[in-house]
Length: 206
Image (cartoon, rainbow, N blue to C red):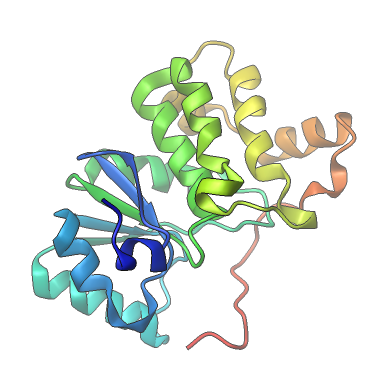
C-alpha cells in the first residue's frame, strides 16, 4: 500500500526488492523512506554537489543508517556521454540491493535510469517494461521541448547494439555523436540541447 510519503516523493518499485525510484526527498523524509522500504543504497542522478545542502543531507542520512550513497550524473536535456552511462551501469552492478534511483522530480532522468536498469537486468527482452518507466500517469514523465530524446534512447540503443548485451554496448560501443545523428535522421534534432559537457544548476537550488 502506498503511503503519503511514497506519493510525496513519487516513490515506486522498479523491481520490488531489487530497485526503486523516487524524486528528491525534500522536507526531511529521506531516512523514513529508506528505512520503510529497506533500501540499502541511493544512486543520486544529480551528481556530486558537495556545496549544496540537499546533497550533504542525503549523504549524512545514508551514513547514519548504513546505506551506500553513489553519485551518477545525468542530464535530462543533454545527451549522455559514454562515461556517464558507464558510471551508471557500474552503480547498478556494485550498489547493494535494494537500491533507490532518484533525481529531482523522479520522472525524467530517473525514468531513463530506471529503463536502463531494466534492460541491463533483463536484456533486450525487457524493452517493453523499460519503456513503461516513462509512463506519464504513473511517474509524471511529461517531457519538455529538449527532453523528448529520453524515451527515444531505448529505440536507438536496441538498434545500435545489434544484439550486444546492453551493458557491453554501453561500455564498448555507445557514441553520443551517433545518437545525435540518429535523432537528426529521424527529424528530431531539436529533441535535445546537444551532448553533455558540464553540469548546469538552477539558481534556486539549496
